[in-house]
Image 1: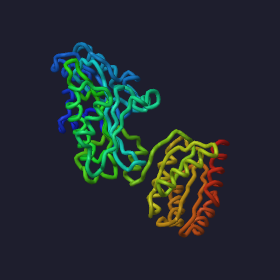
Image 2: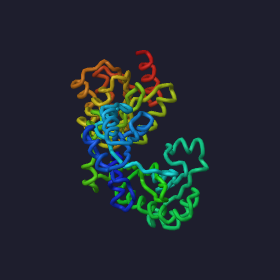
Image 3: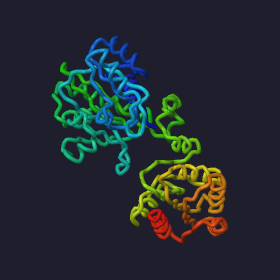
Image 4: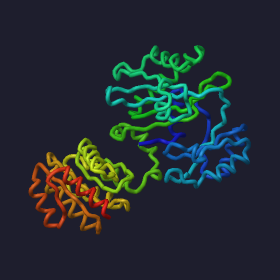
Length: 378
């Protein structure tokens, strides 16, 4: 679950991380009043859950309340990467002489969080890694001990900070790790972390992505979810308890198990196709859940074929097959489907699908080939 910038920075502030004291406006007139109240130049920033806001024209520096109102009117209602801007953050402008990057992600190869720092703040960290990898310092964090003060200081020195700024940098880094750990985040990021002209460090932007699997422990954070930022398919998937990510291809995928889903998408790519989604129905999924999954896939107008790859361990093949037939009775479609079912009650599942005139494949390779050929022919 992603949080907006203003929400992330509010959480940062609770942990003692210095942030601009801005406010959110939902209309241009309110933006003007906030700018007037702040009494200085402000930054008008679109609040949408995607990157690249500045490049899209969603971040502008206003020298006066009138200009803040003008920019807010221009930004509100913009569409940035498919998401409409419904609110803007009015932050006091901070004159700065340098920008740095500071963030934490889960490194699954190391099985631990990794803090990253870079002197190239303001840039996307992926671009820094591609162009100037030597500018990124990394510190693997022991999950039991947590980030240590000396490790935070080493990062500060490693990115070339003036030694008088290192203690403040270390304090912010340690606070950021507490945010990461306390919220069960999968990513936390300050980009950029301003070095002001008065040699103060200020979190000018903030990003916080929470682990959905841990939200049961954080009902206060769950309440911050912005449902307007989700598309209907994502909302329905969340209600049905499905793991779903929309992609840009034209072959819908329904699989039970995240690893199997990744393998299925890889095989589709191998045979020249493009997956339209990642969708994991999980173990033990009943007919109702399968029907919900299929409705979500078929709601995508780009889908030209659907590949269903089911391994019957906990999930029974006949239950999945009944779910497919039930969904097709509810959602009329002419999209061709290919099903590969193996494992528990697989023969019964294939029989049910054959009686419904659906294609079946004996292996994942054959199923992927069939789905790719169908999608290319439509």
